[in-house]
Every structure is written in C-alpha cells, then in structure tokens.
Length: 216
Image 1 (cartoon, rainbow, N blue to C red):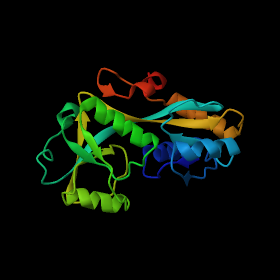
Image 2: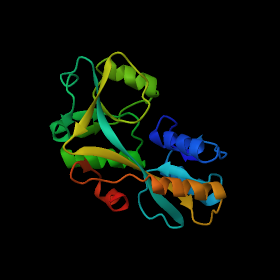
Image 3: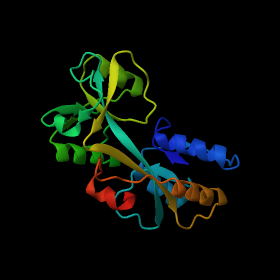
C-alpha cells in the first residue's frame, strides 16, 4: 500500500482496515504521490495507493477515501491563535508559507486552487527540512501555514492549529488500484473504503471543481 506520508489519515484508515479485516497482511511504502503511484500500480510493485486523483486515470480504479479538513497553523503569539475558527475568506490578501508544496504535485495544485479561490498567495520557498523543523519555524514566527487537520503533526509548544470554516476547505484523497489487479486483500480493501467513503457537503465545505464529482 502506497501512501504519501505515514502521518496522513490514509494510514489510520489502513490501520483500521487491518484491525477489522482479519489481520490481512499489509505493507506500507511511501512515495511522492500520484506521479510515482501511476507507474507503481501499472508495474504491480504496489497493489493500491492513497492520493489525490487528478486527470484521466485510464486503467486505474478510484474510490473516494478521505476528506481532510484544512487548518491554519500559526505561532502562539499570532493574532489569530486565540480564535476557535477562522473564516477562509479572512485569508484574502495574505501569504501562507508551505515549503513542502512540490511544483507539479497534486497537493501543490490543490493549494494553488484554494489560494486562487479565496485571494491569498502561497510562498513555497524552502528548503523543506521535514515536519519537526517546519513546525518549529512556524512557532518561531517564520510565517503562517496550512495543514491537514487529521495529520499527526509533531507537537510544538509555540504553535496553534485553528480550523478554517464557512466554507471549510477539505483535502481529498482516493484509493487507487489497477483494474487488472484481483488480489483478494485489495478487493476487501476496496469494499471497506467504499463502505466508509466520506460525503462532500457543498453547503459547508470547499473542494476544487475537479474533485467535486468524485466526492459528491
């Protein structure tokens, strides 16, 4: 099973499947998302991948798996740190710092579309030294950022997460698999994810237009 990062909610979904699916054998590998997952699924080096699915999938099947709420990450001394929520429109005119936004990646596209929809810019300058350093830099006032609300982010005493609302942006991840792959555990996983698929609520949530059809 290919995941972008073991801290992401797809790993928790796999863990639940493993616990409820008769202790099926599961091996997790990490990669760089959709770009490598397409090739790995075609070659059969992985049986399934969790990532944001964009563009034509050709021989790949797709099942909506996760809608992760987006949170604002700020230093404890930031003016928004004491809020219980922040309206997404309040970010207009600001710049969020996201050093992990790799050009050409599906997550970079998501946040670029989010910024365009609500009028804020994205600073992807790095380098990206990993989660621990990123959280410490935000806590030190390097900038404000956006993170998934379900990610197991390293704790830092000087950072605060504040949910975005009205609407709440949600990051979509799907289970991808090759249609020629009939591994019995994969078939069980597809049924499990299908039975627990999240529902997109356009009245209170936001998704880029290309993602809405799959999750509606």
